[in-house]
Image 1: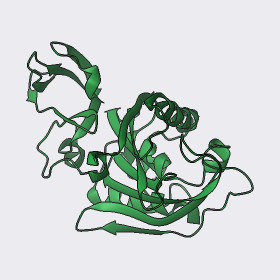
Image 2: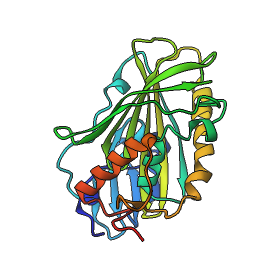
Image 3: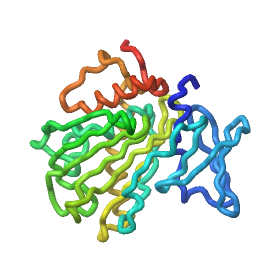
Length: 282
């Protein structure tokens, strides 16, 4: 594992409620086998395949660990702590691609009308309007604001089409958070998060969370809506080659709609992220 940036990150490794007291759950992270444990008193711990103990914490409905020594705590999603929100773990899907490819796809609005037809987009509403992207040096995050897109059904509870405002945030090389217009309260945003677990450089568990202001939809409805979206993304991701994300600007020709991708790749390149990426074209 020759990537200190990724080694010293907190990484998602499973769903909190699936780890029962007294049980051990096996998983993989960065090509290592892990055992996740919850004792009878509820205390969490993890162990690497060489017997090395690892920390294990529960946050946002998921379990997180690290193989290194993170310099900062896990990033914050403050909306998830608001008492009137419904927080739903919407699934974990194995995808044969790299974690950075999963995050880049999550940031891409251009595919909405063609991959998520009738839900997140439809023809003739295919234009990705101008939006702003920047790298927040102080927070060490990629931020995209003023993103707008017409969506026929933006959420499980949506009654019809609407122009939806998006804000994208990438606070972690393998995690992204989306804030989008709430159909019940235009002054607030629903939150969708993608936490990508890098089992290997080309195999990922994509975990998703929805934190929404919605007192009409069941958690099953919310979960099915998000799983249907990612079910459409999965074959696209698995047919995308190379599976590791190229960071060389010459590797794949960008268009205006790809500004978030350009900044994300630039950010990874500046951080010297190697795991799950390709440094040079060809």
